[in-house]
Length: 140
Image 1 (cartoon, rainbow, N blue to C red):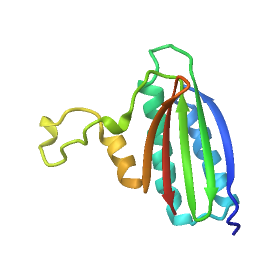
Image 2: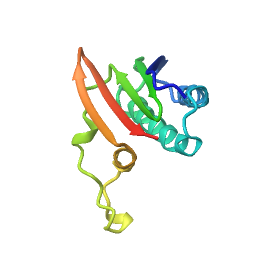
Image 3: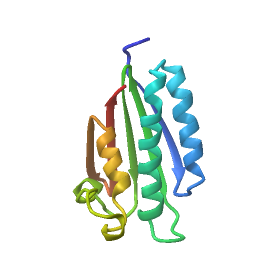
């Protein structure tokens, strides 16, 4: 296993069908860079949650948009950066859901980003050049 850093960029449209293609790309890269098999599920879950939120909430209904996903591997660590031109939104500024209150009394939404926060070793948001950038980092 090489300690050299490798980055792969995939551009997709804001279409929910693209999530499968991104997951397949991640799976192929995971094998290529000999990443620990037991850690792939967390990476896939984070990727799917982040991208699906961008697709569902980042653009107005019917609005075309692009999403750029960068996968960076430096075994055993990896980074997934999702950049989009959707509405400015920092998901990290959202308050964590109250998991102790009864489900019927909870505010909808927020569980996905909460899960991503829990999975990440480091999670950062930045808005630059008119684009949202969410960076998920983890040591596998």
